[in-house]
Image (cartoon, rainbow, N blue to C red; front, side):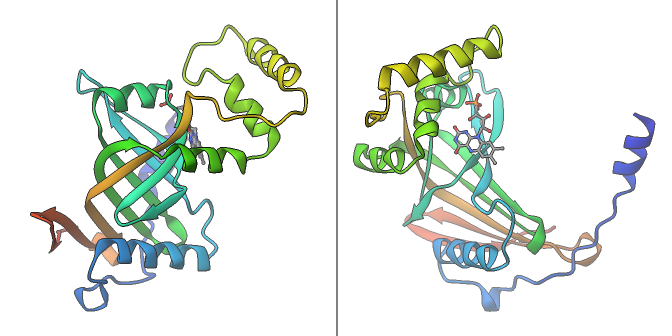
Length: 217
Ligand SMILES: Cc1cc2nc3c(=O)[nH]c(=O)nc-3n(C[C@H](O)[C@H](O)[C@H](O)COP(=O)(O)O)c2cc1C
């Protein structure tokens, strides 16, 4: 432990790659998000759509995991998962969620807070599911996501069972699998700066308008 703790306690990255100023900020957060997404794609950031999804259960206990953002527009963010998973359970109990992106190559972080308004339209979930490779479709059918397994063999048995069942036919989307839509009500754009004096600009939805504020780093 000693060496690892010594290493992590001494990490001192200075962030120098950019600035975020009110002068070059887009007027709405979804445009700002789109611009930073484009920048991340252009910069060939690793795992651009990967973000941390935080949920809270009925006892106010938080939990977080990485997911892939698959679509966004008009302050709505789509991701796909198993509705019976732990996160699905939390969302059923409490629709408040938070997404966090970290793109080290650009020294940028984006925080998005919002509410899961509904499940994605079945047409969208179907289209996304249908575009997945055959083995991923089998995987979605075979994994009772977040449940305890006795061992890896048990999962393999589910997979083999579904391969036999579907036997190279078209595989439909399971009802327990699909998209969720997060409607954002808060965004924070973070650009790393020298000496930990980072730029942070927040957009908060208030009475249908976005209030823009600079936050201390
Ligand atoms: C890069 C990356 C992307 C992931 N994308 C998804 C995703 O889009 N949907 C999903 O259900 N799980 C995804 N996962 C797996 C989740 O992190 C998590 O293990 C799983 O959803 C179960 O979470 P839960 O038990 O909290 O429901 C991803 C993991 C990683 C590391």
